[in-house]
Figure 1: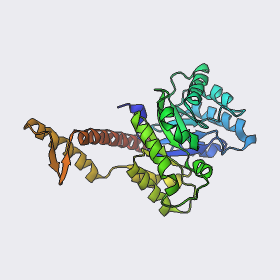
Figure 2: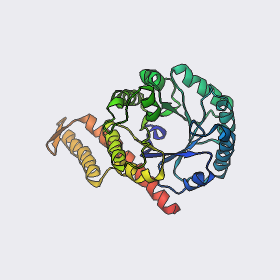
Figure 3: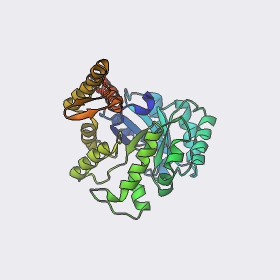
Figure 4: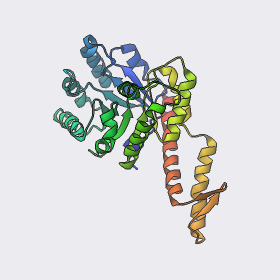
Amino acid sequence: MNSKAYRPRRSVLYVPGCNQRYLEKAKVLPADAVILDLGDPILLDAKEESRDNIVAMLKEGGYGSREVIVRVNSLTSQWGEDDIKAIAPLNPDAMLFTNIQSREDVLECIDTLDAYGGKDIPIMLMIDNPMAVLNAKEIASSSDRIISLVMGTSELTSHLYAKVTQSRVALSTSLSMVILAARAYGISVVDGVHSNLSDRDSFEFACRMGRDMGFCGKSLVHPAQLPYANDAYTPNSKEVEQAQEIITALENANASGRGTVVVNDKLIEPHHVVAAKRFLQQYEMMVEIEKDQNEAG
């Protein structure tokens, strides 16, 4: 298992580069990952200031065990290349690219990143438009530098002329297609944001729906959403016990000459053990992240 691709990303918090207080506060929030954001939400006249703020924060450090990702502006914009030039030498944990529609777009981002000293930086790709969804397989397979796809569900919904509903019916096909592409090529996949900050019930529902569909976690726009995402994507003690029981039961069955076994009235086969071991490995990483964050205060 690729530890960079499958490290926990239960909660992935966007932090606007224009707000120094938020950038500092993110160092103590219980997020698995933070996206220091230079992208579309930043006002045009604050783009360069935001870049300077994020450069300063990366030099200062202090984010602990949190994965630090920088979302840069699209290469088609006037800021994208300068963002990469400024950020690449500082070696963030990953760079998030937007406005991706094809394999060629991905390779252009990688070439630009490499040209400015970022050859060792993993990349993430935002899937935020219909063409990206339709080309998700091509995009996911375009480079082994890719560690995660990140859904841009808010923008995608607008592109689809769709309505936002609790069931997310308008997005279900797109979400499934991107999950399939990510899993086919062994990379992480993170669900999109929930913009209605006052509707906690719908947000919690979306977290649990995404978890059940196969997402690794949820991207967030406000710290108040962190507890809900972390709770939804953290295994409970019963699930951990069941995973351990599955592994032990099939090992014992194999030792006695049987290829399958029944656990809690369910037939267990080798692929269930593979899934259980992956599940426990991620759980152990979650425990370690929480321990590091608690020790750091």
